[in-house]
Length: 583
Image 1 (spheres, rainbow, N blue to C red):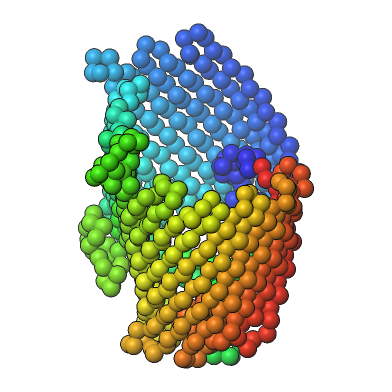
Image 2: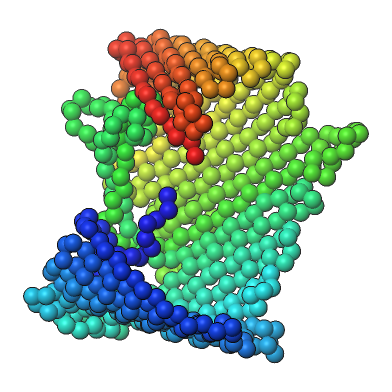
């Protein structure tokens, strides 16, 4: 949705971030002088009036010059406002002057000055409010020719902050900053982006500044490639930074059923919601809670490093002739995708952290950590007859919360084989060998490490574009690591799913699942909820029925009914009706 106003509209007029609704009147008038040499001078007057006794006046002067390599982009904006309880002024001058150096490959050298001073005063006390602020910055920059595809730039700037004390602003700190930028885009096969800033903060007056002297760095580098006509494509991203990190706390808030992500399982039957009793909901009707992260007043000096890459190797890009034979034909059927995403924040120990692989999940210096490693090997991927995919997916995560560390681990080996018997019948076979683990030292009852094995053959029958039916049988075995428990489960599930399209406006879908689970432990624990996928030992029945009707071109009506009979528990019926607008 388009914003009604500029992002900083409230800030420009000295208003709080969230203001109560009021009748508003805005009067604006503008006059401009401009010649053929791109020299312009403009003046703008604005009056902003609200029915809650707020009245503001803004005067803005803009001066733009582009003449013989010289560029100027200057402005002077002053705002005066009067509200029910306070009054103030907001001053914002900017001076930006640069010159193109024709004898130095048309590089541009420039200087910039900016000031922002918002002085809001209490009408009764005539003192500056705590929300008042003032800072100024000076910058000098050197940039390469902007018409070239390869661009370079270096900027040095200093910023000084002042804080409200009584009736005056007192300087508290100053920062020295160096920024480097590079964009190498001339070669369409290899592109490189770099943007990095080094910052040194100096505290001038510790009595008014809450900052501490510090050195920080923030950098981002990305390399994108497309080699040998698409045989090798991919990108590499690296980010590094340092700063303050808040310890995080969270709470679970109840929302209407189906609109949350978490389910509350009262494991100890005391009727009290506790942090170790919430799980990711297995069914939509159980999703009654959302998790809200809240900041705390406890800060940690932290370093963060991000490293991502993705590589696609596709021999078909160069071996695409129709008459290939032998080894070339074999290689053309191969496809390999590998990707890695890592993001780590660690406790700063006096220096910056540049190595994204320094810490393991078990290292206590970590604040948060996440890694996702995926490899997919495909054979005959583009064949309409048969093919298979072999993949390995590993994720590791660790978070420092107010009650301690929480770590998660997932390691899955997946094999998917497909065989088209005809245009109407497709056979697939899915196999899985994996590990799913959660480690929470604070809550011993939540710890588990599951070994998972499953196999699922599936038959798909498709009749044109109007009818489809899918049936499958899934055998799954789960076993907890002995150090965490002796839980075992064996699941035998039969699934039937179909969809029928009536003309182009209506579709009916139905699904039925029978799952017989053999489980050797108590069904009212965190481990059991994960192992049983929210079901119960014994016979489990799940069914679903849906109807979608296109009313007009961009309006769709949906009816959904879900039922569940888990073990000896009562039957659950859930019905939903919704209207979807398609734009």
